[in-house]
Length: 186
Image 1: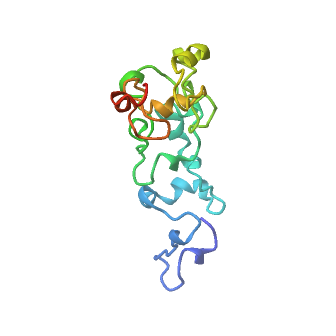
Image 2 (image 1 turned 135 degrees about the vertical axis):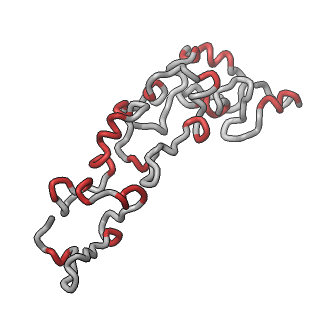
Image 3 (image 1 turned 180 degrees about the vertical axis):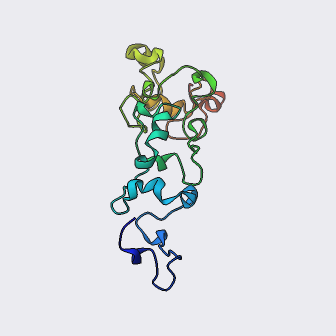
């Protein structure tokens, strides 16, 4: 503890510590409210204690499943809250179904799709699929409006990875409904 007692105690009642963490650079929320001072302030170090999550949660990061050492960022708040350490990130519901459907059990590491280290908003479909041969894919999509051969363009028409539920690029209009009217080819 620091030797400047008045930082935490008032002079009229020595037993009453009145340090208000909510006025500090790191207001305590969630599970941090119940943490003891020494859990974060290791060795009695109170000034200069890092406020990034990784400082205290490195062991959680290293033991996490899926393996966070696969290039996950150290900003824990991207997927966790101080109230509940369980990740709120749901890949299937929020982005693309990898735990259900045809992609279930087809991958082991995040970097199989997210091919740029630590960049999780970038991905590539053509690294794994038979679509890696551009000539074949170009032939299959000949005449498709807005078709491009890029690592992520598949997602524009196949947002859930299914060939039978095609969407117009950038929209929610099912292409298979257009085919029924003669308005397009899925």
